[in-house]
Length: 479
Image (spheres, rainbow, N blue to C red):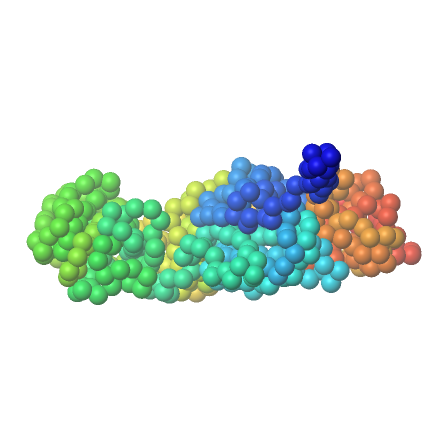
């Protein structure tokens, strides 16, 4: 009898375990959560999406390049979303992005994002929001906008019950000091071998510095650091002598040729090299590392006879950068062109030409000739600037949706989708009896392109009523 009783108890325990089912593991923000990302070649999330991909966690750094095939390196947007399980609790969401984001948690009836920097980007600033979630699956959506320069996006979250100390995001380039105008781009590394991504990038007048036993720049140690300076210099033909004195190691390249190679510990030795250069633009690279103790570098470039080549001073028409970082391209377009270099806010360069539309300007960056978008520069003395691109206007940026003045009202709680079709992902909801502005339609008139709150998306005409007397013919076909 006792044995039978034990068997019955064991069966009951197993049955309870079976019917309870497995527990669902709460979401991990940086791993184990798959996100769908759709990219648009405009900054307004307007269809069509030109590239769709999936990410296992959001720790994305595209730099100055394109995030995917067919996507512009500048002037793009993305909608990145996931549905994942959360245990009940209050969660702190962390986002670090360049340029702007909107964070959506589920589909709030207020149609207000939890975090929204679209109208006032805050690149390089870690943003936070505390959100209380019930147990179960929740929709997490990040809308991203990239204007120009570097692009990156980092997202994570933590339950406040775990006493989180904050995310382990990398130091963004926007945390560096404001750059000064100069003909050299300096990249500083938090190691002695120029490894990985620079900790700080600045523009400087010269590689020459005397740091003593202090730090070379905020964010770096006083010992065991390295740096690389690059400059494009326009020189006359002739013989030149390069002289460097360093503590510790130094290398010098001219046009890719290694002329001085003394990358070892030292205590202030001087090294020289001679080179014959043709007239034109030449590339100079100086590499340096500091092991310990005092640190300094002296660099000199002299023409035969002992005179330094005269510096180029901007004159005539000039362009001053108003973006934080701006790409300089080999053609007056963001599509299919190559980034030659990047310049920084408040730097000023000579203008040498423009396209016929005046939307792109050709500038001289220390001897490097390239194109920048007129949206991100302040132009002085622009009279008589020649057209230098053959008279072909550059492509114009996508404009915001045009308001038609026609509204549509939901006949039920209506899904807003990223495109005109049920196969497109849901990006929001138009609540019952709520109205939205129509900005377009598909050719058949079966889907309306709407704006509601901060969203632009599509709703089915089967479940939405047009305003009485509306003229459908004036609504543009947008998808």
